[in-house]
Length: 390
Image 1: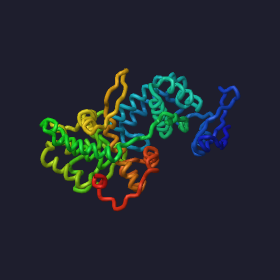
Image 2 (image 1 turned 135 degrees about the vertical axis):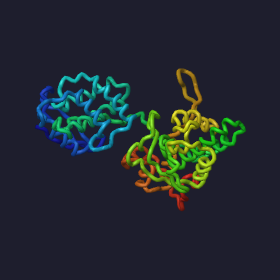
Image 3 (image 1 turned 90 degrees about the horizontal axis):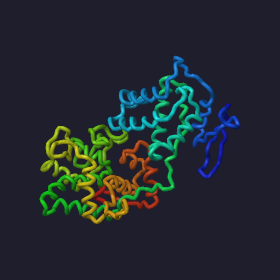
Image 4 (image 1 turned 180 degrees about the vertical axis):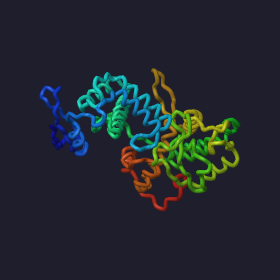
């Protein structure tokens, strides 16, 4: 028998479930949840039960293997199969699930067993992020087993590892002046007297302008197709997968979107396509000389880092007792800059969510909420971003 109690504490309202636990000295244990819905789901599933199907219990390891197969071939919970990179990531995460000494079958697991697994993850994973990711994937795996009738319910539901950290720092995008300095640095490099530098920046310059003008992820603008460009907009519908193995769909379905282009950016990109971009079977705007997509790491090191150095946007960091000069920003920071400008222009939050390709507005607020306080109203916003800031 389990009961739910509403609690008010430093973290706000929470819901505490007291449930029977023979392994506890008092005969009871407690679990805390943020919502009543999670607490009720936990309460309903915290008592003894048996699988309702064949009566043959799967081991946890069998369930993990089945889940990986479903991810690769079908997609979980009605979703599409995962990408190659995501599957590799899941296989890495699965190693930590398999390393735990499971001594019960899947349908014998109870909440206290999952709490013990959580403690083990926090002690044995290389980082808190990996531990949190592993527990989250395990919850997804058990949830899929529940949907398919291998267990009665998802016993992992409601048991999580918080992502909060006292050391977490909010994103700090480039300022408007720093962004302008990057654009000017790209202009200078593209007009360098050094022929090799100028040739490289024929391509890097429009890439940098496009990144800042649209807030696209690096993998998205490296995979952007010529046919997805108009004079005023760019369509985002694919990306280079992390790891660089292939071009695939966007990170999430919400990543499919249209974004305005400033006239300066549009003219620059179309000029590059017409005069410099090699023809290629992938319809890429910015292919390599061999016609394939660029490596994100090469762009960061050979292109963007050079622009930061040219613009004087560097910082000193200590590595192994030696001070080194490194770029102050990364290519992804141009995405944060784009979001910060939208916020300062008092763009509707739902529009910001759509332009950033976020599935939930919660993601938008979690990342950029601290920037909203300094937003200022801007009238008569011109089409595109660069036109409004240069």
